[in-house]
Image 1 (cartoon, rainbow, N blue to C red):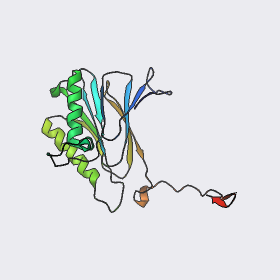
Image 2: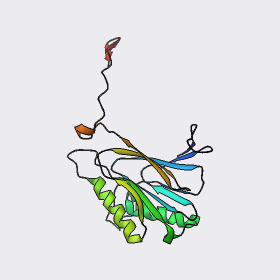
Image 3: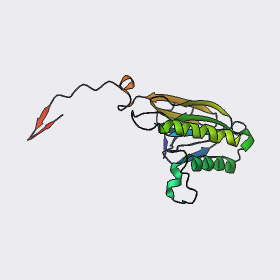
Image 4: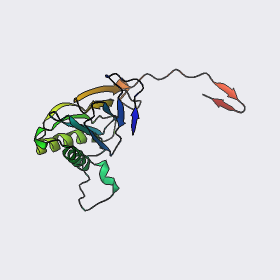
Length: 190
């Protein structure tokens, strides 16, 4: 989803591109900032620093492992998302040998569940290593969600950690104060 930022923090108006699960976006426009929110998912921000062409993807799971399956589910998987992003960069004029990566996400937000975030981060690191794309910066793992903003033309990234309510007790945000009960007919609203 693309929209204008009414309160840009960069010189000139920012064009915000929200990258959601299964999406990727590529641009060389210096006014574009790509944004996403991650929990256990991974966002890879790849860029050719010579051309200023960069892009971001957002994937949910590492790889389906089922090569015979050709369905719309492919966009959820890292293997597909990484290939889509790299091909999009190359089509715009980036050179594979100059690509560099920054990866984010892979948090463990729920106690008692498997650590899919760690699997996602390991997949992204392995994929980029196998492709010969250096990771120049990363922030993966941990117990917090992340809000990531990426300026593809400059390579600048800003990350904000976001507390989640179902994280382990020591990282949960404080519970809001209870609202006083209000009467509305026969129903009490809290």
